[in-house]
Image (cartoon, rainbow, N blue to C red):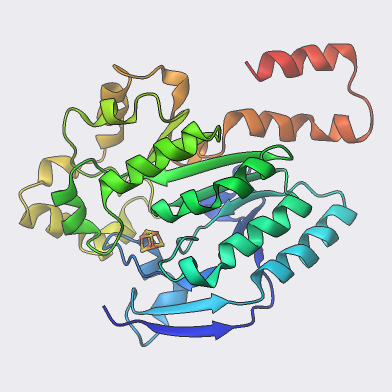
Length: 307
Ligand code: SF4
């Protein structure tokens, strides 16, 4: 696919979390605008960043060359105001675009984060390229919470080819998850959006993830399925005789199935549980820590909450 690449200077890199992310995350961070992976179900296709654009989704990319510098300046200001910083990277692109291999934008941001860490960083990606940055993630997790969340919507490569033909292969993503996990970094498999999978899917994730996050085209597109409808998802499922997978309660069935393999506290579902519980609880107790009021009683509560 041809790609129009522009190098730009952006005004900000941290965007205050709203909507889907306003559940514990304080900011989203998108090192790029646009996305080479061009998933057919991508809800960003329906957002103003794309609807006001002449070039189709998947055929343009803005590289925010000053991303690392902006991050440094912005986190310093937030810290001066004692603001918590829980970052979701990324909400409207993948931080490991193919061009990242040479552009090193995301790597540059992680280097800055090692110097000026947030409280929590979740990296959401579909790319095995994240394994390149394991050295920085290991350093960073000594300073703040880190979660690497790899999207694996299905274990079927034929299904991936229908819905996300330009995204990295599923086997490569699972291999990358394993590598990150073995490097001691907390991992999550993001089955989002749920696509048809084989009965063996849970077994492929056993032992390589701490968390599983399940979301669907119906409840996870920000408009209760309307965006997915506008993107022609019901028709695409129908065309490939997959309609039985396109139903409002599919998340309930998938959770039930995955519960046969994983304890329920490993599984989170859609928006209300998207922010890792443990860190949510820490944020709740942060003000007590800051004002030095964390008594022995509070410490006991903290211990219990983190179990
Ligand atoms: S990787 Fe994410 S941002 Fe990129 S097209 Fe797919 S869903 Fe959209």
